[in-house]
Image 1 (cartoon, helix red, strand yellow):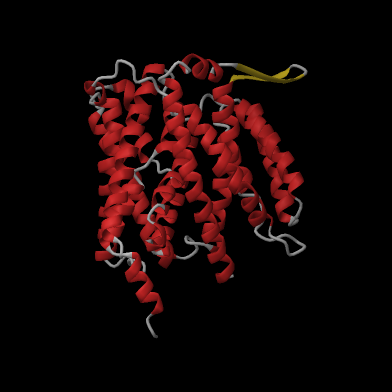
Image 2 (spheres, rainbow, N blue to C red):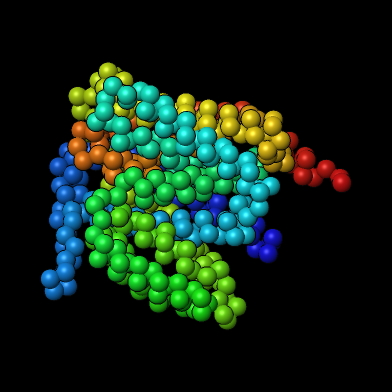
Length: 400
């Protein structure tokens, strides 16, 4: 079990790292499209209405919302699978493993939110964006970390991954509690029946993925129509996938392995391309200092450092947790900066928090500026704090 868990972790890190680099390219392409002669086509395509109807039952949304509500449900399904695996047999399966990332992640969510609220107290219309800087983009963060190559200890990658997984759990909870609309109880009841059917499949340890997928689609439609945010259907569905089926196979691992490349190289880049585009024409330096973008940028940059590094330091010094082997405080500081790359989750929450186009653009400016600075600072801090490749080779070849 230990060998298979380690192999799964290596596979996850490899795919997420490569996906993060693709995501960076997609975001850059979006900015290019939004600020060139293609801007009309770019924004026009995202506003294109797309309708799917069966009789009188119809879902009618612009393309952007199909991406954010539909395609991202697949992303959240994968997140749910990862969370379940980590809790059952991974980095969060025991207190010794989970204590440090748990405390660090709690600080990493709380402090950015407090900084945002503090800077936006005089702007009540912005307060609903308090959760935007609390998020971490694991693909983007691991993509930057991968640029440092084999010098990065596996334990440091695992720490960043565990913090991000707990952060995802927090983000999912926040979306469910604070960013859902008015509830249609009939539709919610239909979703509950679909989820109950999936739980029955789980209880009988059904190995085939097909019935789970069919009921997950039904669940998504009902949740979408209920007023609860549709992406939560992905997480709920993932919790019903069994780790091991009646025939000895591993449905959760199989689905996770299948979905990883699709999410890393298609779903997330499409989301990044659709949501990162913001027109920079007429943008002045003063616009970056407005409460909304400044609260997001400083929430990410300052809040994550104080929250993750500060809470981790207190946890270790009080004996509540301990540092992983071969990981020092300078490296933990670097991880706290990489965790300040909010991007995907921050943009996603920003779209839920605001309806105003001007506020959504301000969110993009804050998220992009904060995330880019955090990525650069984290990269160079870790580059200076990690052992040289030659030193690592000597250590690996030294006689026991």
